[in-house]
Length: 387
Image (cartoon, rainbow, N blue to C red):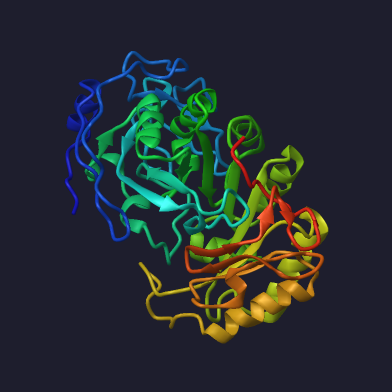
């Protein structure tokens, strides 16, 4: 599955703009033929379109750099890389080595992200590069999130090529997903910016571990965001994700302030973040801080990666989480990885009739008319049509 190559060879390949093949994972498919080269996005600071200078970092007097994209604030010596593994300090300049090197791509239902209040029934061109600023012990895509770019089979797709490919495959949405798009920020930013000019919308599927300034700048071009809220416990974040809770909560507050559409997913893991007390505290925080119209998804855990000793989450636990969210006053609470279940569908917040009936990723019924309930004309929060 892996095709490893030495770092020098990888950089030489980048300089030559050589394309490879996609890494095909379970649920992801190999991509099509390589499109002709096009001019790199105009924000490029390097002659090599694949060696992209990081947009947010500080140069330090000793030749090291301080990354300012995410709250890890990596201090990186010359010749070394940051925590995410895809950024490198070269002679005092910080570069993203994964720019335009796509290791996974697929045309997915938007419901798979999951985004339930954003253009239901549409397909999204979904792609990723290697790397992550977390190491979740239960990561389902650890083969790419925990890898360096040179360890994978990649294919070169510049932002203009991504937009062209998306349109050619009958979609008008690009989803930056699978690994962690915050660590390929420059690539995501250029795709979203170029796409916006050409009528292609971009959505980010993220852990939310990003600093405020780059997030606000990015939201100028994104159309929607899905945030994985791992737990409402900082201890959980530190022990199982190598992260922290507060920066993610800050991200959610910032998203609310920007006005961009966003949804939240909580993967409920037995014995670790499934206590009714924690789930209730989380739901109350969402309602009081973000508002009752923010969709909250509770998804069922299945053993993955380094967390294989726990059983799958009991369906009863997901049912309990769904009921807690609804009792807390949230208008749109969903269940995930449990099919069929009433929690897969969208209900009117006023008359409570089924508006969007789902079974898995399939939409069986849509009773929205221009964003309103067809029964009582209640406006339903979300993004229902292309901008």
